Length: 217
Image (cartoon, rainbow, N blue to C red; front, side, top):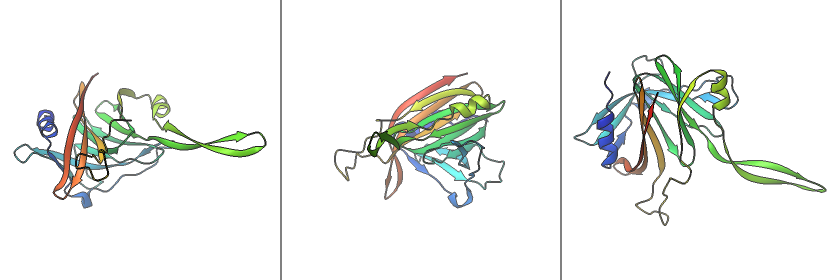
């Protein structure tokens, strides 16, 4: 299967659109891995691109389907959410505002995308003869320990803290809702796009293509 990497690049670099038809058919797979920090959390999709309409479409398929080429990894607070897909295939994951994206080679013909939560958590600090103080610190709930035990190969790690532009004032039309990753995974290379999106009355619009990453393995 030839991936649509260049077509995707064209849509993202020209401020195109993202559509998610058939979401009602894409059941979310949310199961335990046996690890406190890492959890399966994804839905299955077929990815297509219409360059004439400037649209990337993620058509949902049932969770029992084996006919899919893309996973949508859905974030969970204080967890690394993961989703596997066959190679060649696509990994999409959205709603980033500071979290970290990883790709791991988890099988001969499989790659797993990771949406690692990276945000503020409350850390209590005991003080002598005084009330415990609660400090807020930024912590990444990364999958490193899990994949050390599972003996998987990390292909890439891309942080996003400080990359989202919310606009100068509330309601700024230039403000962005979220950052998103779409990775096109070949046998020996992954091309990953980092881009921002904004919900409009006409649908979900790409605002900026922030970076294009290449990982060879």
